[in-house]
Length: 232
Image 1 (cartoon, rainbow, N blue to C red):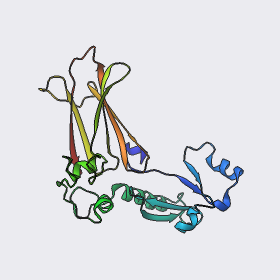
Image 2 (cartoon, one colour):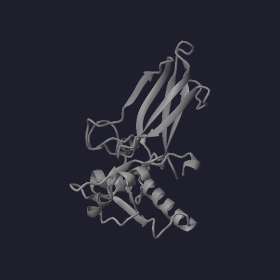
Image 3 (cartoon, rainbow, N blue to C red):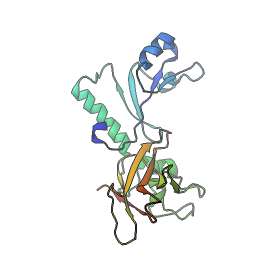
Image 4 (tube, helix red, strand yellow):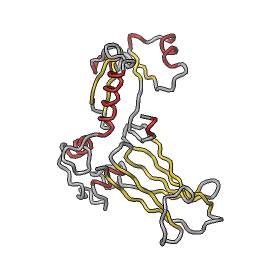
């Protein structure tokens, strides 16, 4: 998935059994590995609550609901068929699904509205942003204090920057182009460059920052235009 250079809302963590808690084993697993390694405790007993079997890969969607389970002992990922199965499970959870084709993932609608019943153009919290925009920018459609925010700033080199939160999974294209005069628009990296990073905070969001290449001392005007495009 990394080779595609696509942005997927996927986080992988390890949870060690309370019964297997010892320094040597934890060090063996976590050494030379950037995978977050969590330790279950006697007060939490996550393994028991989830009914975990040793070496389970348990996949959650962005609303933290169980989306699938595959055991890596009985389904060794060295086998290409098992690998492709696990990959497909990850991608299915990342994509979310949109059964009514309204541009809002099912699990997002269920989280906020209790079912796939939301009108993408409605504004139930009256904050001026539709359900679709609240979804696209990772905000709560039922809370008027939670709405998309676009934060302008300058880099230490004096380059104008625009930062905003966005949905991290596939399904939407965030098309950003820029202009210095409102007459000609371009997405060329010679004028503006973007970088997007998953937040890994359980919200399904990422942080996107677009930076003008030239500092304000060399470029007096910079305008950014953002368009959303749903994948067909």
